[in-house]
Image 1 (spheres, rainbow, N blue to C red):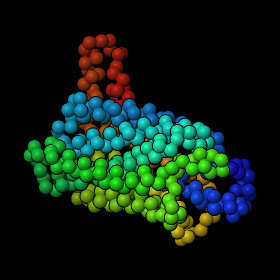
Image 2 (tube, one colour):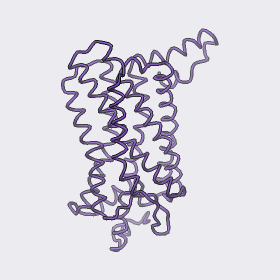
Image 3 (tube, rainbow, N blue to C red):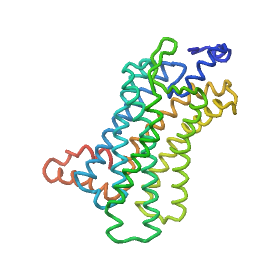
Image 4 (tube, helix red, strand yellow):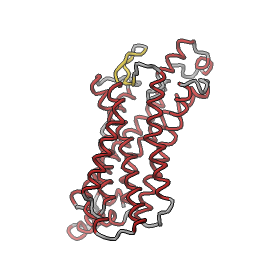
Length: 331
């Protein structure tokens, strides 16, 4: 847009400034820097590959090896892997969109589907992380040692159904108002609210409060009195990784909300952050979908044991150097 010309970026006309403000809901750079777009494409490709392998591996361990029967928490991990797997399948679409300088080539229907799945992943992920944390809190607080504390019964299934329902409802505005719109001759997949800036600000406030602040507050309160254990540490690190991956994106989104509500000024600093930093925070947030399986495979003893089992079988039946791919990648 005004790459390599800082004064041109600052001295925009009123119409250009209004155009940029209308594009603030798009999770891409408003500048179109080739280097930035290339970096985003590379990150999306790596996250997609790692997330696909990692989450399929977790599903294999939990379903095929029936690990899910031993823990209610693992039942939530199963659902978390499902939502992360759904999300990483959207990354090729975003990579192509980025490669084409953020021009959406897949049509209006796919715009709604891909954008909705992307947003639903954020809600479902944090809701299941919250459920895992609360489950651990009640397990430790109540000192439940019976089998009912270790098998996912009817209650955990109802909780999972409720989480998916809430995530779907929270994603409804995205599904309704996402559309392909022509902006300066380019087809962009974005949100377009009939009420303009106000409802867009309300939408972002919902994402910040429901998808970040409230769940993280519940998790923090639940962990205050938890005792340290291997399982607790693994859940804590998963929650912490979600916080660190999403916090920068949510902070800049909050800044954007303040600008939309005229509570903060639109200035050069905001332009630079939104144009060059914000797309990278989106990439950081998306990497969370491939971190969860890696963390669980590295932190939890039962996962490591399951991953070592195929490697031990290979040692017995083949040459010593014929290692199992999953064991090499995660253990």
